[in-house]
Length: 234
Image (cartoon, rainbow, N blue to C red):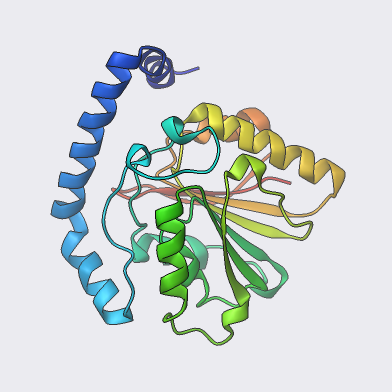
C-alpha cells in the first residue's frame, strides 16, 4: 500500500480528522469546479436542456447502502476527457453493455449514448442525483430512449449483467470500496466468462486494479489535468 493510501486510511479511521478533512476537500472541490469548468458545464447543460452540473457531497444526500462515508463528492465528468477515453478503444461498441458506476445526474450515460452501445445503465446510490438523472433522461435527445436506464442502488449490491460490458468510473469512492467492487467483478467473470473493460477517470486507485487483476491489459491511457486509464479485466 502506498503512502497516499496509508495516510487516507489513517484519516478515515479518526472520525474528527475525517470530518474536517472531508469538509476541506468539499470546499476545495467546489472552488476548483467553479474555477476550472463551472461555466463550461453551465453551457453544456443549457445547450442540451438538462441539469448535470454542480457539486454535492454524499453526507448531504439520501444514499442507498452503507458506503456513503466512503464515497467521493459528486462532480460531473468533463465531456472532452470522456469522449477521448471512449474513442480510444478499438472495440465493436454494439456488442457491449455500458455501465456507469456512480452515475450521478447521468452525464456520462448520456454522452455514451452517442456511441452505439447495446444498452446503457447508470448505477447511483444517492437518491437526489438518481432522480435528477431520470428527469434528464426525459429530455436528452437519443435515437432509442429504451437503451438508457438508471438504477438507485449501492454498486456493491448491483448484479452485473452477464454479457460483455464496459464499466465507467469517475473516481467515485476510495480504495476499500474499489477493492470490494473488483472482487465482485472478478467473481462474476469467473461464474460467467466474458470480456469486461473498465475506464477509470482520475485513477487515484489504479494500483487496486492491478492487485485484483494482475493480468489486466492496459488498453489506453492519458495523463493530463484530467487523466484516465482503460483496462481489459478479463
